[in-house]
Amino acid sequence: MAAQSVKRRKKISMPDVIIHTILILLTICTIFPFYNVVLMSFSDSVAISKQIVYLIPTAFDFSAYSYIFHEPRFLDAFLVTIFVTVVGTFINMLVTLTGAYVLSKSGFPGRKAVMSAILFTMFFNGGLIPFYLTMKSYGLINNLFVMILPVAVNTFYMMICIAFFRTLPAALEESAKIDGANEIQILYKVILPISKPMIATIALFYAVDRWNEWWFGVLFMTDVNLLPLQALLRELLTNYQQLLTSISVSSVVSSSSALQPEMLKMAVLVVSALPIVCLYPFLQKYFTKGVMIGSIKG
Image 1 (cartoon, helix red, strand yellow):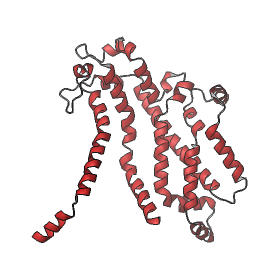
Image 2: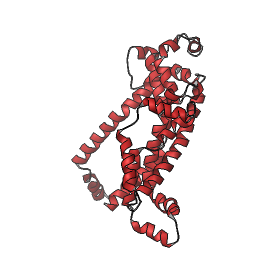
Image 3: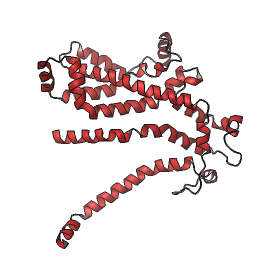
Image 4: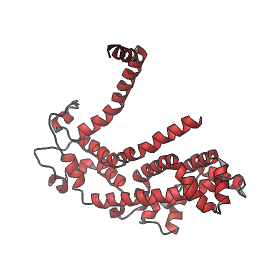
């Protein structure tokens, strides 16, 4: 037993210790900014005003969160963002996967012309005014789909899907065709089930894009009740000096606890980032599986 314990100890070499130490330090450097943001969002207002950052909070002040959650439009904005994220990501994936599957076929008629037209959109656009007039002519002003349909597909993400579909063996499709499957059945019953790592990655990218949508909301929404969450939080940040002196704020924040601008900024960051961060643990297994598949296939 003693000999075995000695052998186990010898396996831990100095290079391993150095590598693990470096990785731990890099992890701490990566996590600390996020920890600092969360800490400053509810730290004592006196400490924030003096720009003092503690590793361990000595006092808690939830005035910033109270102000955000007591905003009358917060619930509506949150529901709008949920709708845009869920429906938008579904439409994004539907258009991207079907389009990428078709364009990955070398025998598709007019494939080069379609690919050239898609690539053209990556470098050129018609400008803001023509874009606005187009959305207005389609009746999408004050319509939630204005934050979904114009960005129904991301050209770069589609290129990634096309490249992935080209790496799949053609024997899979040939065997499915022998069994009588058509192209739609092949895509949804053969190709997509073995493409979960890629689908999870692209879906997460799209979900983050839709969750962070604010520009189209500001540009096309004249009804304040239809603003997405990010646009509402942006409004709170840009107007916080006026909002802090308004009657609505004084009814939420007590006079003994002054709401500092930095507290509000950090609380906005936490509220806007936390829901989408919660998706990562559920998708992590697909990322790990994708890395393993790539290492095995070489």
